[in-house]
Image 1 (spheres, rainbow, N blue to C red):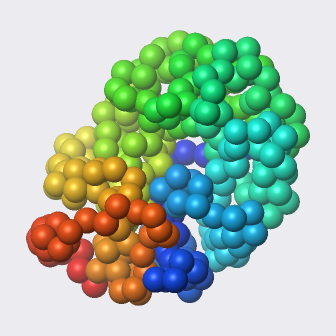
Image 2 (cartoon, one colour; image 1 turned 90 degrees about the vertical axis):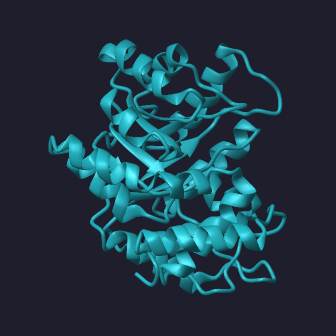
Length: 299
């Protein structure tokens, strides 16, 4: 039976590269081990991991590295979407064979698909694997609530959704209100920027950045335990850092790698794979000041 028990914080890993564009395997292993040490249930390899910049062999290498470093302590969600249904199926099967616990897939976005075409795409992939799928509802490739519920009813493997279309908070609320007996399990995304707001409306987890997994875990655990005031206070304390990261995917990659370096997880030379819009030195100083204020240096 498909695993419908995934809940909580699933950070999306940052994949580190050296200045020549090679994957820094040691840093990636360290990141996974560090996240597992916080008792977090799972991780994802997805857009924030720059999966769209990886070759097919590198996709396999990253997933293999993460699964092995997790040592059974973490569920591993692998992004396997593609513009072509056949390639997406091949990616999905390969990820399943390599030990992925679940898949994350957004609809093709080069051409706007009808609801029927999107359904055919998702169901074809779901029928080819035995592990659950997170449908990714993202700008440019949305999976509206009504369609998401229809898909969840169409195949048991289509049982999770990661909501990132703005405004995502009312979208979560609508999904929860309409899901009924579909069994659809909503997760938040968008870098964790609306973690608490989504939780109040019924999200069952979130897939934020990987740079402060300990913080997201504390916020989530406090909220689930009924300590909403503590969760809110902790959440607000990191608002400036979350806002700094949320400057667009290219800048966010540089910022995330810098945070992971300052926290002692990555080497100083680890960086995004080019092209990636680099932030200026003033922004780096501003980021470092925030990290120092939050006591995140060297942890």
